[in-house]
Image 1 (tube, rainbow, N blue to C red):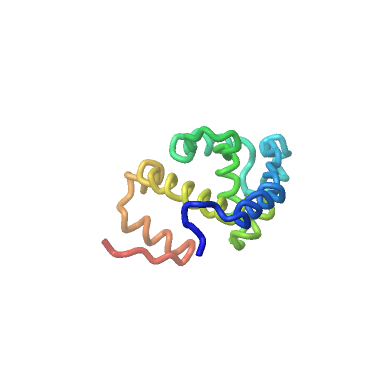
Image 2: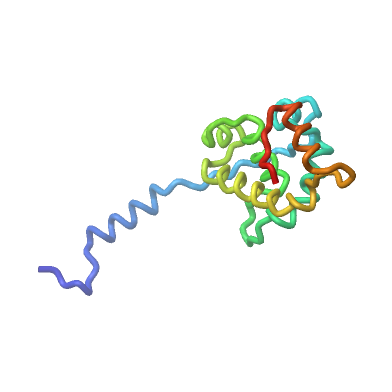
Length: 151
């Protein structure tokens, strides 16, 4: 029986092999999304560069990560990942492959942007104050077939 306080030579050799076979982490350089033409951005994200900049100015305080790592996503990248998911409605894997990030990163980006938009909902979306709410709800139903609760 081996003594539990002494290292096994097999374990030591396995550690040496693991260190020798460890793959180096590959970090891709990020593209400047806003340098693309507006038709390219509208095709992929359904927003122009000016609109993405506007969203970035509004949402940046809520979605930026305070990290000491050197490869965190910028707020523009986080917004563009979420916009691509919203515009496309595709699977997280597909968005991640297109944006060169993992499925987990896409999931976190969509969640962070959604929560940030939810925080700004009541300050950004309001019914016009000069008409009764009932007329506005009836108008929504006439235009888009959207039924709203009768309150």
